[in-house]
Length: 259
Image (tube, rainbow, N blue to C red; front, side, top):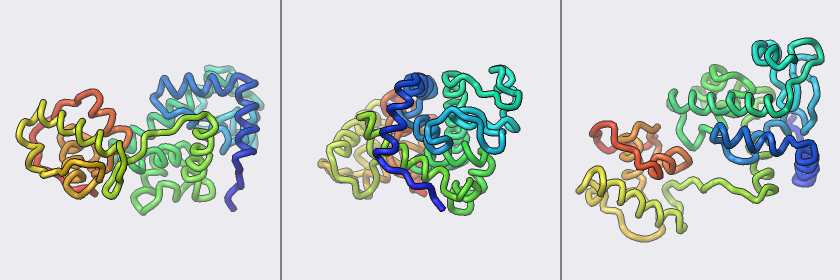
């Protein structure tokens, strides 16, 4: 049975994390690993209800329940490998962030679409990258996680934490979206094609306006294929980042269809 959590519960957890200095440690680690604000708080909430404890029969160590059977080297380096030991929260936050970043990039290398990648990374935090990939291949990266819903549960807490922190991720843009972000995307994407592949943009026959239609999906998929991203026609963090840094096309490719 899934554990119930509410906004007031998470608000109390956030207050405790701020008082202990853990929120600052999480923010520093998230920034270093290029993770969205509030994600580590959501993991700590899911793991321990924001308590720096030893759990899981003595194997889960500290705020992020870093397992002593899988992460012996790190725990030894922190002097936390003996029974009852816990790593300092700043070091644990940095380590947990590195695990999530690795899982995210592992998913990207193994064909996990951008829209599913954050959940995949969270599933892998619990089930390991291999376990999450096995689950993903049969329909759900959470399939091998504790309770079968770990990534989904953390994402639910993450949404509340982002609201409490007053931050929000850029919205995913996909076919059917209609907002100012779509208009900005069209302008940015057109500029990219004009700089790198003059004449190609016009072949997509994209109309002006705020609607994300089939033609724009085709252009996004083509861009993703040309710069080496997973092709799904959905604009999320990785696609926006590639546009922002003006990624160069790796080689000429035909327009790709989204998965």
